[in-house]
Image 1 (cartoon, rainbow, N blue to C red):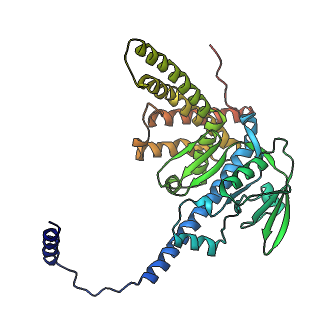
Image 2: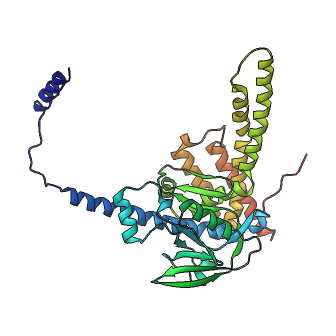
Image 3: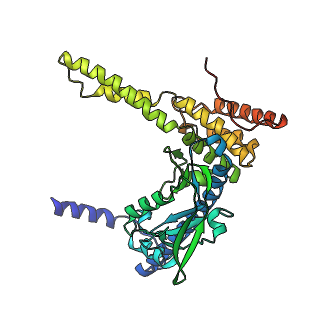
Length: 360
């Protein structure tokens, strides 16, 4: 059978019309070199996007500690990376990262926010962290980042001393952190969707969103919205709702089992799924509302905010449904009213803090 199949395919191919021009021959070595060149462009762009995100998110976090209340953490103003943190890489990509950026398994400084504590202390791009306050950073990727996060979680906001490897010698850097809203920001390297989300502690902006955004004010709008989700503890609230819904569904599963019906936990899963969506629209509205205050306190132009979400709604209305997000028209109107509210407070010299919902 396989011989007949090969014969049929061969006859088919011989019957096809081939191109007539003699095109240049490209060697595998040339192809490999070009793959490396294009990957360098991708990394350079990604680093540029990371830098912009760190600059904007740092500015918003530091300016809004009053609104964030106890949802705060030390802010140093630097971001890190390692060869392992880049995920799955092919040999060409590894070669680019090691040759151009001298990236290894050790943690290195990736971005430094201008005028941040790290910048003022003299930390530089490419510095390789060896120790923090005398504690060695391990080479194992998972353990290294865990250790780093633990050492930087300084509840007393005391200064830390980094021992870094720079230009073939060790350098000691002492950094005095600021207080800022707790929300580290990251650019998803492989995510090209027009998306952003918060996980309760961090915020993630997809590269597709960064390509859609026109300027710093628009990026600040997205960042503020996601930080507001974290600051208002929406992720935590949704998890609590899911737990409650799951328990209620479990009671139905137990009741069905008492009558000899095996539901396979369907009601438990259904209850959790329905409950986690409870107040989703309201959480989004609250993130919009609080996020605009974040924007204004950080000195960004809030007059563009409503129009940005209008553009998102008009061009990408399939991203949002009224079961999880406000409809684009509702969102635009509510945001514009929030802008008016802030401007009125400014005219009356009132504090720029969101209005707390009064209990009935």
